[in-house]
Image (cartoon, rainbow, N blue to C red; front, side, top):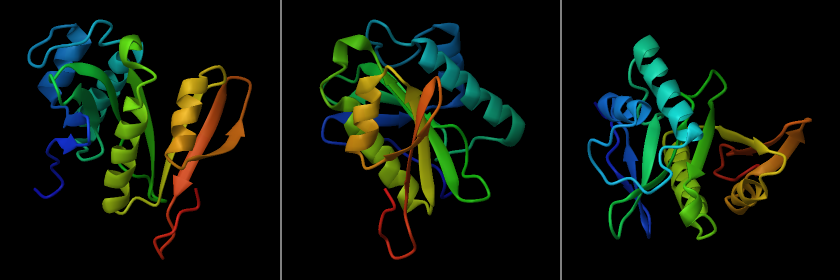
Length: 173
């Protein structure tokens, strides 16, 4: 199947597409493979793993639009997670989420990981990627801005970001 994705490599990270078994281990808090950094998995990682498992149960594995572990290439330690909330909708839009353990925040890992996820989405014909963050999460807001996403709206709880690509290959940022 050509939609299967292998590990995605960046300069410092390995983004590992989770399997159902790995997501079940995360939900259960059982490390069955790679070493976990202290603080992994957190509530966001658990939510992402559960969303992935629900998607798999309802419509099959959505790869490449599933969940990924963020591992440092230097030691293989899982320092966070990111992924898509599912396959593209009818308009070709996907939603992403991501998070890192506190001990590695502020080192550019989130920006590096999200850039790789955006590149994957674009290479697979996605028209737009959306994400949101709490009003007070300035770090996440900086990540989305740094990768070219733009603030499109906010409400009393969240700021919503988006990036899209037109047919000529340009960005509507």
